[in-house]
Length: 115
Length: 113
Image 1 (cartoon, chains in turn brown, yellow):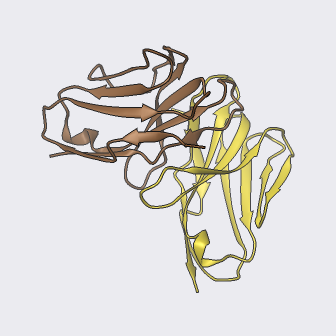
Image 2 (cartoon, chains in turn green, blue):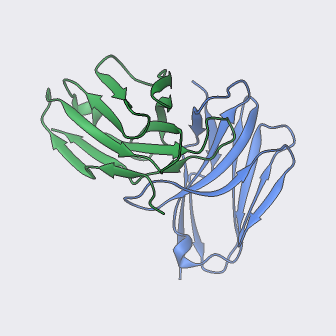
């Protein structure tokens, strides 16, 4: 079956611009996660959805970052007034349920470059 | 924030050799996961561990959940060139039942044919 799909795979934008990154989770997975991975580092948690609601957004770095999942499936991560420090690979993952033991299945990420 | 200390940071080995890497935490984790990431791709789950002391194998890979719940190791036996990549440990903090998976900083493995 299809895995987690993320689009675009690469995004180059100018400082100050607005970007949207899309994630299509595995069908039937109720939990969806966004992580950010900087070069040479492990992924860092941003936000987690259970269904349509954000259950934990404690990893969002500031109010320029926002994510939605209006129908409990596809999710969009939105970044306003982008800064060069936002450059990273943004990974989306989904899992079958939201329990602490449910493994995450990751997409291939969107590589965001802010110039 | 919560940190997982993963070591070694990198390894360069000969094909056929065994590999061992580990992960430690200052606090308890109730699940340990090991992922592998290839360039340009997302992490792929290798092994999941759910109970202290659990020893689980997946082909040439073996991982254990430490008795103290504060550590885990991953062994790869008889390495082959396709084992090249970055290996991450990850875990759910003992007090958390949400999706906030904490990752180590990764071990980069290079295999010389």
